[in-house]
Length: 428
Image 1: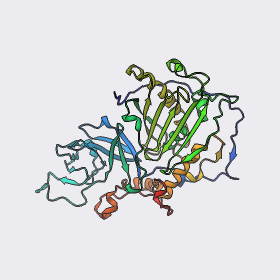
Image 2 (image 1 turned 90 degrees about the vertical axis):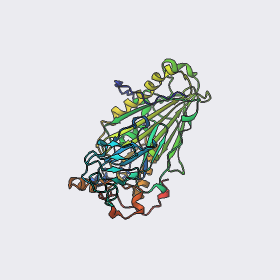
Image 3 (image 1 turned 45 degrees about the vertical axis):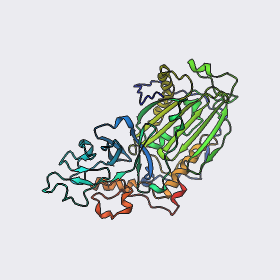
Image 4 (image 1 turned 180 degrees about the vertical axis):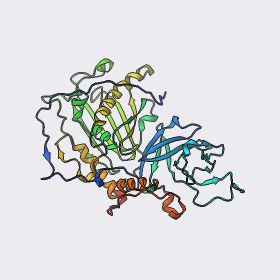
């Protein structure tokens, strides 16, 4: 199957569409008073998650710097072509390893003194030593994080508890010749959860994207439930007579037919998957999207998209397929980037007002975040901010730290909010 690794559309000047809200059920207030949001409540970044770090084709013969969870990492390929992810700060004099170079033996050389680090993070050579390979301090190492290369992306596990983590999801369309796909990557100037909550919402479709649900109240979605899955995610299905699309896609559906839309959320990658029957419920014609969400830091997020279709399979239709999907992406982006506060409030205090339909999916999402926090996987950013300001650089702990004495590391691990005793299995 032909593969388009990445297509970029530079500008999407589409206005946000608004329509009147009729018969709204909005306004159920949670509690007699609004709790004060303290500084401790203003961050939600989580470890022990598989995140998409980069598109596979961007990692070639040179190191690539990636920032995730507010920390710096370096991606490169070893001598066998396997993707490697290391903490990006050299333990010797704190140089940026991504400024170094890939060596023929599969190591990466530090740009400052050419110390070499292998795929496990251990220093294997100090060129200035009398014995370059035999006089290496035990602490001359950096954290190395598990990687998987799947579906055109490099996935990195950022944490130390791989055993209890939710696995990378399946993407059956990727290897199925009946499907064709295009991809897109976008950086959003907003926190991960503002970016995510727009996707976890049916009611915004007619208001932001002009996709009405039909009937007497086109902004009210059909009745639906949100089902929690054993893997820690959730899903929902809505069936309704949404508006007919424009252009060539208009020919795919009879105006009288209903449309099914199935949405799934996965913990790995903070992934959203949507499957829309654009040809009607019984036509077997679908537009499928996967959205992978990777927090750069508390206020910026990278969004990776893969869009599939099983119709109009000719390559000349790829640009139109990408344009239609990215139109919605950039309308959502425009909305999310203006939301306040820039750092998301924490799970115990948000949201304060809930509505019958707007917050069904968001409620399930916040339950996931609560479980991650209870597991002890949430970064304590207040403490980490203080450490950063004091010049005490901390790193995301890798699985190797569980098996070995922490004294063998130059950089200590980032602080996390203590577990409340819940089993880690509650998430995976």
